[in-house]
Length: 133
Image (tube, rainbow, N blue to C red):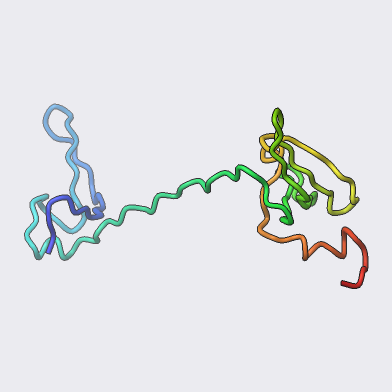
């Protein structure tokens, strides 16, 4: 049984031009916009789309996680450290392909990189070579 505030999907079947050029709209399958229970049963209930919230931005990069460059997805780095200093916070990382070490401020790092959800273990062979662990 419907209650006040429930929403339904309707489809406009046709548009008429009435007196004083006012438009009137006929709802497909109905002659009126006042419904009884039988009429409401013919309608499809409207479901509000789920609100998509932006994931919380990471404040500190996760050590041991792989981050992908936003502009060049082939370029990835592994975060090796994250330090909070008195004046500047830093993120240390190593490039996956070259092994080059880098340091950035977290705000700059997050502007250029996104977390892939993969850990360093999937890239140890590429970064360190074929070492027996």
